[in-house]
Length: 468
Ligand SMILES: Nc1ncnc2c1ncn2[C@@H]1O[C@H](COP(=O)(O)OP(=O)(O)OP(=O)(O)O)[C@@H](O)[C@H]1O
Ligand SMILES: [Mg+2]
Image (cartoon, rainbow, N blue to C red; front, side, top):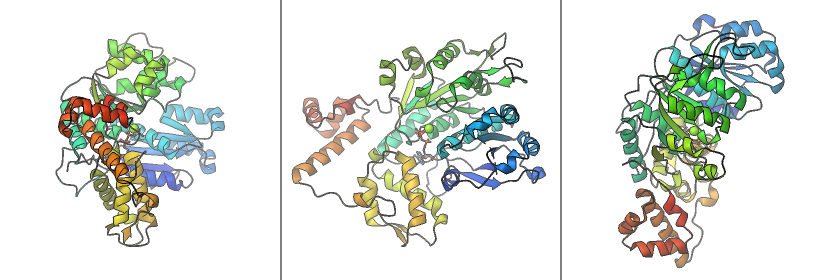
């Protein structure tokens, strides 16, 4: 068992009551939320970096914008604004957002979107404090721990071969400065991996700045990335440092790089070639020293084939590649993660919970986990609240239909067993056919024939963890 760990983050929230979805996501990501009111609490606002969420759609805030400004001007808080689309036309609100907030989200918005913005705002606020911070963004991931007992948010848990290979790869790539490209399905832990690489690198005391390339509106992306000088455009009444420059000395994490618009791809490529940023409206350029990590769940080969992503940029980003294993290929780790999440969130239960019933354990293994670890966390958290007995059952996880394997013929059972063994062998051997065949005790030709018969030939192209 290995784990990387990090600490709690504080969040000030000002607005109408949050939805349950957002609240539980905040808990899941390790935010300690403090509901605050305009005009009160000011002296007690923390002097350590925190996240802040201000909901301009709340009537109370709309009628007290002056007090909102006082609050927003607290420098240790990385603010994110929630706005209705109509409020984007309100000059006062636009000014407050522009001058004081790191990001804004137009409503309605998913909890994910809000939480991602908050993580990034917090990371930037932490930079003003002169050091990296806890959590996924600006993470202070500790050294590798041997025990599962004291896990907090931000740890990576895993004991299967694929995860141990991932941990080895993290340590190896961490000691170089070469760009790392992390691919993997949604919710597999790409962001955690990026933070862990930073934390194990010599840059660990410098900033870790994450940019969600898909979440920033196209027209704001250039100024977000590279910053602007005072007077660069109407409303630019002070110089703003871009996120690339903010990461100077540290690591720049380009998340969802596959969603970066073509226009910004050109600017990013220029930056990677020259290692200098030119702020919008600026005259000179500033050298910036950053280590680049990028991640995406997009299939980049297809994106390049369809001319949605520049091949020259991809090859600069993808010098070292790490592929996150999907949860369904992690064997016993599925149970390990479920137990860990139960431990972490069981305080939300109405009564003491002792663990998972056998039908739940079976369902955990039979289900294919399209949403990976994130989905597992959500299902376990829901089950903790819904469970009526002392044990969590398959139906509490809403996986009742996966509790029992469907009746199978011997031939079907043999095929399922062979498929699973082959999948695991290919995963362990990073898609290399010869080595997987050797491990399975068959010739390369036989393995190839079986792969063709089961329409599994795609599995051999999976790059796996490509760093040894
Ligand atoms: N090995 C792990 N151990 C513990 N928690 C994990 C692990 N992997 C992922 N998680 C948790 O699962 C959630 C999703 O992880 P993360 O955000 O890093 O995934 P992602 O690959 O970046 O997803 P997406 O593609 O949707 O952005 C987070 O809450 C993270 O803390
Ligand atoms: Mg992510």
